[in-house]
Amino acid sequence: MSKHLPPYQKQLSRREMLGICKCGFGSLAMVSLFGSLLPSCSSSSDKSALVDYLSRGPKAPGFLPRAKNIIFLYMDGGVSQVDSFDPKPRLEKENGEDPSSKFKVDATQFANVGKILKSPWSFKKYGESGMEVSELFPHIATCVDDLALIRSMVSNFPEHTNANYFLHTGSGLQGRPSMGAWMNYGLGSENNTLPGYVVLDGGLIPPGGLDNFKNGFLPATYQASILRAGAEPIANIKPIDSIAGIQDEKLAFLKKRDKHLLSSLEGADEMESAISNYELAYKMQSSIPELTEFKSESEATKKLYGLDSDNPHTKSYAAQCLLARRLVERGVRFIELTCPSIGGFDRWDQHANLKTGHESNAQAIDQPIAGLLKDLKMRGLLEETLVVWSGEFGRTPFAQGQDGRDHNPSAFSMWMAGAGIKGGTIYGATDEYGYRVVDKPVTIHDLHATMLYLLGIDHKQLTFRFGGRDFRLTDVHGNVVKDIIS
Image (cartoon, rainbow, N blue to C red; front, top):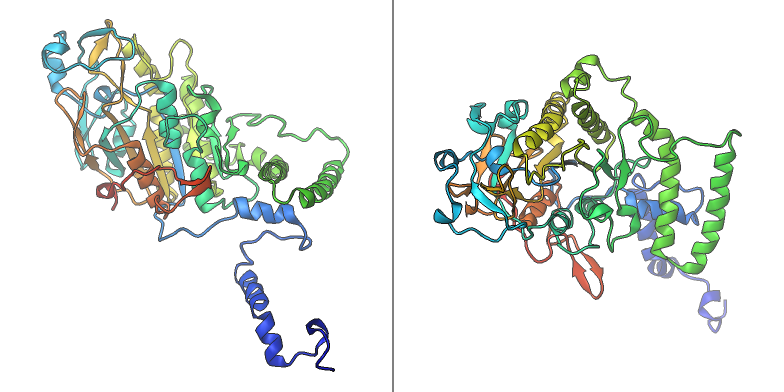
């Protein structure tokens, strides 16, 4: 050919051709290497499948993870630490005395400070670790050698809504991404027919509402899907079309129209997420009914969780716990359980009638949680599943009025079990009254950093750029609590 021809018409030598095409060959090789992670696409222009991969596909952790999944047992309302996992004999000795004569009393939520109030429940030591647990939790007490108990949790907020946002999103402000959304953003989902982030609704959506479970400024595919244990776990899960194949035809038509719209919008997150979500919803119509059907479970397993209980609230929470285990088996990344609705009692938020309220809530959750821990352990799933038990804050060691306890963000207890956790560990301490942390305080940011670390994620590296700066779940704070990790 003439050397005066334009470049695109010249005959290339082998060396020139390889030099020009090397990046393209490298890209092809990369696709081949990671092809097993990509969902199958009917064509290279099938953008919805690629969007599904980018938003939900599994991603490699930053370092060797200890946990693959997290089950968060949310104790909505704030469990009293001095009545559950942090015994204080001093309260019994000084029961009925004026707290302000013993220590500085901070302003309380309802400014109704009563006398020092001893715990209505006794404590006993359990397991080889000798961990002390209240008689409120006789079943969980049998699992103490698998628990790492943190008695030194602190929060920044004394009011439920802001404290819930802080616990769930790392910020007391409304609208930030929840921890489940962050963890799925960091690692993706291992199941393409179920959501990567599921909240099991026991009947009580916490103060702050569904924003506790939202995606915030992350793509909408990372928000939680709300399920309920029972015959209809999610609305419209059963197909209503009577003609065979009509739903497939509708989906194909929608995909064709969406593909045309996406090509003109050039990457609108809201549209891409909506497409990904309704395609996932279609897949869930086949996976959810099988997931929530317990016929395959043995009678011994159902009894272990308390599904045979005479207490309807125990049965309700038992169904949530069993469903959580089944979600873990199917690769769902983050599962949160909310409290069962118990008529006459406001979650764990006992500003009055402490004894009856805490006993009713404890009876609902104690056996199911112990059953979950034991079942996970027997199946070898506890080694890769992190179980976290916590409320948003604690309660005062003195009474609100006569027989309640007010909010206390200055000290509360929580525990973790499972993947990478050093069982039988007690970390941190409160003062003689259980009022303030005096040793090794652990913040909500520290808790989130530790959860991410066990998933193989450096919390400082998990960022998302929004509004001109990089955000992360732990903001600019947080340290991994390595003393509770084996």
